Each structure stands twice: as structure tokens, then as C-alpha cells.
Length: 177
Image 1: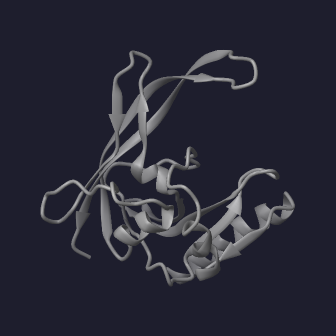
Image 2: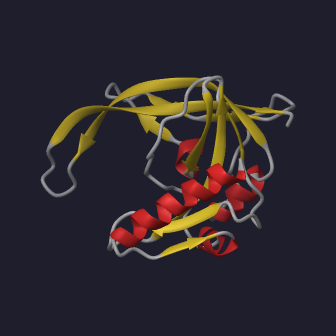
């Protein structure tokens, strides 16, 4: 398990170095989450129904913070082990994956939900920074309860051109670890 996390962290660091991007890991990476706004509009991976992961402690070495573009701000994310029936895999877990809210092409809002052990919806109303949200979730284990593929329209900010696309919005159920 530790080898898988270590390998995933090494791959992320190598990719950042190849693009001349700064890269922090462990608790150093988490320092960025304490000052970055909580909305992170990026999703690099796909989760599948039934997969299980645990959000690490904020003092763990399982955090990575790199910019995704040469001119961009660093984005903090957790590196977790996702367990499924076909095996385990390393995964970069962005806060946006857990908190995503989008409007489909018909204008309907589809939002991610996180349900705790008591059956209540986890909210981040009092969170100002990403770090505040991660602290709410740390050391908790979640199962992907459902996956919604949502048709959306993407817009180029420079030209205004639009095109059809899809995105995934997840529902998570906290489970006992």
C-alpha cells in the first residue's frame, strides 16, 4: 500500500519537474490549502461506483501541491489509495471532485453529495479555504455511492466558442474504516 502511494507521488513529482513546475509534498503541500480558495475547477481522474478511499490526515505525507499550468497557482490534493474489486490504485483526490456542482446544458444544477455515518449531508458552509474543507474530511473513509455523467456546455473564455462535453459528479457515503 505504501509502495503504491510512493510510486504515485514520484510520478506526480516527475511530471511537475518535466514542466518546470514547483512541487511540494507531505505537510509542506498542505500549507497551500490553508490559503487557497476552496473552489478548484479541475478533475483529472474518474472514480467508479463502489470504490473506497480514505482522506489522509492533514499532517500526513500523502499530500501534493503543484501548479497544473506554468502560470497557475499551486493546487493541493490528497494522494489516496482507491480500493475496488479489480485492485488498488493511486489517485489524486482534488477537493473539487468531492464538492463539484455543475449546471447541465438544460440549466439544471447537479451537485456532489457526501453523506456521513449518521446519514447527514456533509456541508462546507463555514469553510473559507480548501484546508478548512480537508480538515472536515480528514481520516474519514468514503465509498462512491453513485456516479452521474452530466452533459455540459464548455465555453472558451477568449473566443466565446462553445462545445458539448460531459463531466462526472459523484455521491459519496462515509463508511466505517
